[in-house]
Image (cartoon, rainbow, N blue to C red; front, side, top):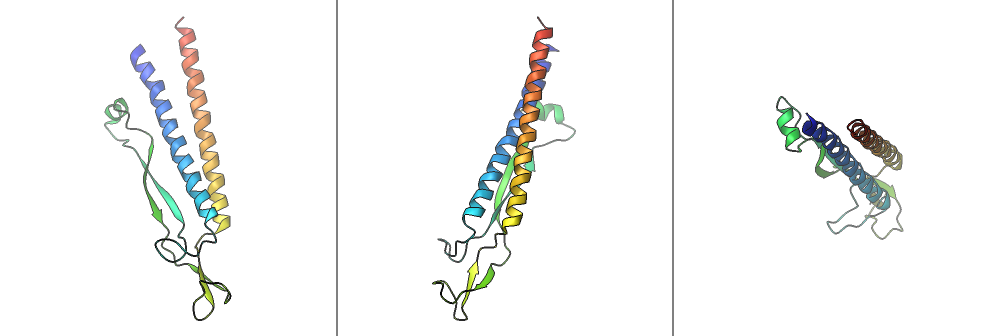
Amino acid sequence: MEGRLTMDFLDSFRVSSSGLAAQRLRLNIISENVANAQTTRTPEGGPYRRRDPVFAARPFNQFLDQEMAAGNTGVAVDRIQKDERPPRLQYDPTHPDANADGYVAMPNVDMVTEMVNMMAASRAYEANVSVLNASKAMALKAMDIGR
């Protein structure tokens, strides 16, 4: 029982740390989107396209005990996808990237959406820190009981 108790605490640490890593990556991608909100030229050509991380839960099914023993729980970044919505057109005939009609293809980054996503990612990060701290406190209490 004692060995399994230790694994339970380690599992909760592993799950929380995977959530922390995922939210940190999400915040980095949001920062990249905000930083490139005015970028009209990219190496691929055309304006910057906003990116979003796609998360995937690690296996959580009838084989849960086996998966947890193997450390396969938590969240993982499945991929980072580009937003396929068309760029927004802004009239600015003086811009060097303006087309013949005077419109510039601008990135499809909406600052309000990015700020909302940033707040959600920040709160999810804080929640994972809280879970990690609670798990640590429980592990310390369990060790105190064992003395």
